[in-house]
Image (cartoon, rainbow over all chains, first blue to last red; front, side, top):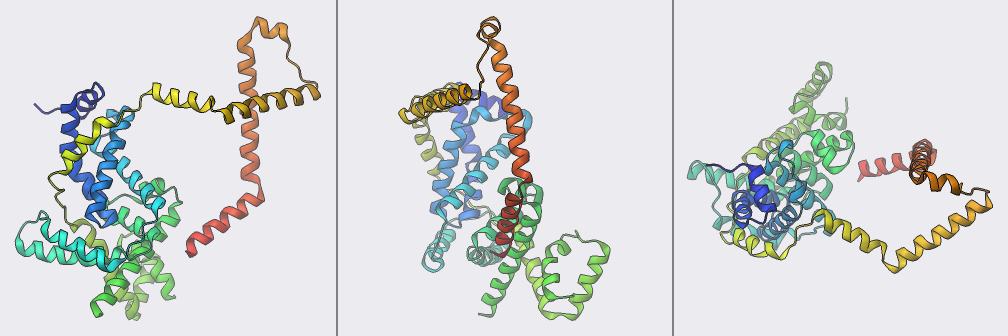
Length: 189
Length: 167
């Protein structure tokens, strides 16, 4: 029998460790990937996943099953946490050394693909674009990730970043243009 | 039509969010400008990249690490929130500030000739709460209105917005 989100949360609030373990095991890949998309680093994604789950655990009382699925609520908590983290620490990465290490780790980390040929092609493209994205200025990068990787609507992004809709649209467009130029320069390289 | 005008509209163009007239203008510019056409191709590649981004498997130990760390974190209940607010109030500095503010407000009230009707207060203590609440609401409304009408605030907001656009 499948346990509903409301039952899982109710169990957690009553101190049922099995319910909490179910939540962690079921949703941690989603949160981990969310963190990786923002940071581009596996080690940082691991720490952020841990922090997000602690935040989720502490604020489970504020989850309302009638307002949507648990995973949607958790992803919202996660995005807000990552954005706060981003702004707090103003992540400045040296793109050369650390990214190389990350891609070595990515090689060991098998992604889910339909076929080996597709896997190779997708990974090459993904690595190229993600590497370039991490070089785009922070404000623009944040907007592009939310729109193109997290597939949020402009309204949702404006609400999340607390910015006017015009600014959000402009940042996404400028971010995409900057990214396209970086990719072009790299391919000519 | 300039290249910068076209560039500002490329995302809307690719997402079919332009009006027919604007779309025609952008398309006409793209036919005559190689740089902008190349940029459209590049941005299209970026837009198409998002949904194909790989899904990575988290390390096998990550779930266990989260579970091991969880019991150390106490879940915040309404009682914890209440206690933390209470703790904030009994902080010496905050308590001193509240005490001083009460004295100053009392002194200002007596200077302005405002003194409570103690018989009325004794008969209906809740009336103080409702009167104070009404007074506070009116004062808050006035303050918010004054803030948004202030030309200085409008000027600062527009400058910040301009600065954001530039940066």
